[in-house]
Length: 316
Image 1 (cartoon, rainbow, N blue to C red):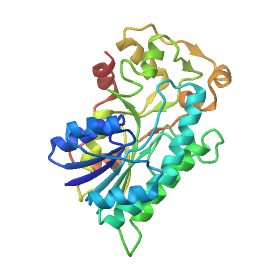
Image 2 (image 1 turned 120 degrees about the horizontal axis):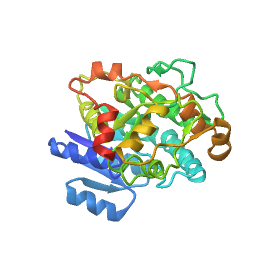
Image 3 (image 1 turned 45 degrees about the horizontal axis):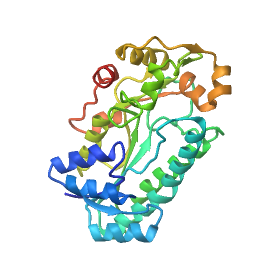
C-alpha cells in the first residue's frame, strides 16, 4: 500500500514509518528540514520537504505521491515543558489542527486516496464526575484554560468527519484519539522531560491526585495506526489508550519507584495553580480517564500493554 505520512520525523512518525516499511508499504514522508529528509531517505522513506501551512504545496505533494492512505501526525511539543513553552506549543498545535488537517483531507480526496487517518488526543473531555469517558463525552471547550487546545481538536475532528459525508468525493476518515504517549522519544522516556522531573521530585501529586491519565506506549499507538489502514475498520473516532485509566496518586509514585527515585511530594491545588496554572491542576485532580472499548472491539488483534508493565519496560 502507498501511504503519505505527514510528520514522519516526530515521536510517533519515526516508529510509524519504520513499521510501515517493515510491513512492505511504500511510504512518502514529510519533514520541514533537509537534513531530516536525508535521514528519511536512508531509512527507505521517500522524503518531501514541506511547509504544512503551504496549502498549494501540500496539494501538489499529495497529488504527486498518489497515496491510498494519508496519515496526519503533525504536532509539536517542547523539550522542556515550562508554562511559557507549553503555551506556545498549545497555540501552534491548535493552528496545525485547525489549518492543516482540512488541507490534507482535501488533498487526499483530490488525489484519489480512500482513507485519511488523523492524530487527535483523548484527554480533552469535560469533567462531569465520571472517572472514565468514552468517545461520546463532550469536549471541554467552555473552559478558558482549555479552549484553544480543544477548539483545535474540534476543528481537526470535524474536518475528518466531514470528509466521510461529502457525497461527491467521499473518503474514509479515522480519528485516533491517542492518550498520553510514553516510550522512546516521548516525555516519559528515561531522558524525557517528565521522567526527569519525577526523578528530581519536581513532579508532585497535586491536591487529591484523583485526575486520571490514560497512557499508551508509543509502539502500541503505532500498532493501532498501522492496523487502521485496514478498510474493514469503520470510519469514526477511537480512543487509543490502554485498558486502565490511572489516578495521578498512583502512577506518579509508581514511575518514581521503577526509576529508583524518591517518592513524589504532595502540594495543595492552590499552590500548584499559582505556580503551574489551571491545566496542571486539572490533570492532577479532575481529569477523566478514557475508555478504549470501541477501539478494542473494532481493531482485531490490537492489545495495548498495561501501563504498569510499560512503565517497567521503559523507565525501569
